[in-house]
Length: 351
Length: 281
Image 1 (cartoon, rainbow over the protein chains, first blue to last red):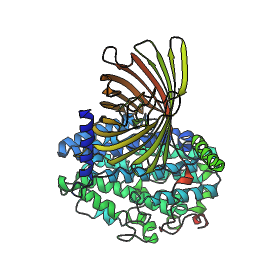
Image 2: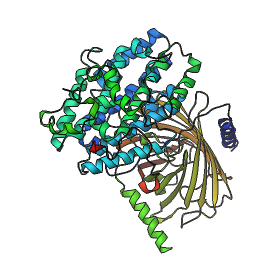
Image 3: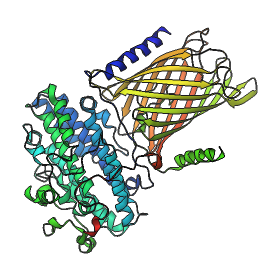
Image 4: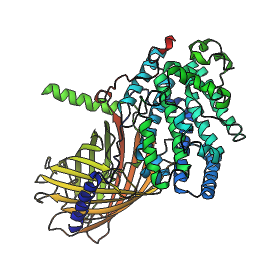
């Protein structure tokens, strides 16, 4: 009795500490995603692609854990080299059937930056649900477009965790005092992350362009094959700059510009956190604070934003589709008719 | 009234048939009795319903057998907080006679104050009320207050639970009655490639003020079998001679679902020009 009472007293005392301003404790703030019959259609119809994303989740998580828990540069390089081998020779080849609980892979990082982890999770759910919508053969195209916009509304309704749907300035990623450290120190792992991001946005293209189930399946297989090609001779075969959604996925961007901007912001934030964790110029004691500042910036649709035109042209300024991993290959049957729905600024730049 | 009952039934049925809407990592949500008595400190996600259908069989030291189905539903009513209800039905088989009946009605609320930080574990408080409903539901309304802590160590987590019962003891419910007190610890380990959690626990329990203290040990697992469905199973035993069950087995399924009508619609936020009419570009 005494022990049980003591446990409860300790919990009440700890809860009081939790709510004291000095403690700055984070709340868990998990939220269920939008229900609907479309959920899990991508896993059902395209398991080889859906499972690959489970392995991507591991890759993102283990990267942050190793960057934060192995501050010594030699130990960090060795740890990341081991993880790179594990990913490219094992986990990506035999990916888990279900999503990876990232908290398990990055326990230390999750305690450092819980909100960042949750913002990524929330955006990844949007990613996954949009695949589900486009993989659901029972929906017609109008229903798919409307449903993705509804999903984006629901995503944005969670203001604690949503990235702004307004494109943010690339300077936030590339021109800060900690910028580009990770990609310089760990070029192969960085290339792998950019290859992930290429596929994550690129897969929307065959799902949109395909007019039949067979065309969509062939398109997804072609995109997967291109992803594997990127891993053949790293880092030269990998994207040289961050893949921009408008450049890699123009059909998707034309239909769903808010989601496309959210994913660019998400992918920029991925790189920013890698840099903050890797950079010696951010003292260990300040890493959380700097991450939180960057998160706040990426939730604002007012500051450091690009116009739609600047955003759509950004891919060309950065080196074009060739520098971003190349265009999503299209099976021959898809090439001609669907191109009329491309985002205008990119016409003529794709093969 | 009839209309309200129909609406409630419709809501429950919609939840039961809502297709494929749960997270894929629910196997890590360690609920009480699924399969261990010790639970983790986290509430179900906001707007999520968790529906649990478990079966339990206990072989007692006196040779009698207890079967129980403890239907449970929980809902993420607020951020980091859940409410729930348990409706246990039990059958006691003694000397060739079997008695079936409802074993009380339990309602509860759990609130999680924080996720883990570099310093603190995740902490929650839970309050339960057990109503003496049914022929096996005991004779008094009782309550309990429980504190829960969870801390991760790599791929393992340690959970501590401590609970005190409130109200008169009297004759307890056959299953799911509120104990005078109990406390315990569980250690789990996640196998992320298999989407499986294995867990072991030890806990001490005094069923009523006058009863001797029992010590139990349990092992079990939780496994994701579809994106929405978790299977769990466990085995438990009283460690003190002649106290607690000789052996207890449990098997259950958990299903997390959502109901779109209960979720925010969101409003169209600004972004780059486009949206639902962008296909006209």
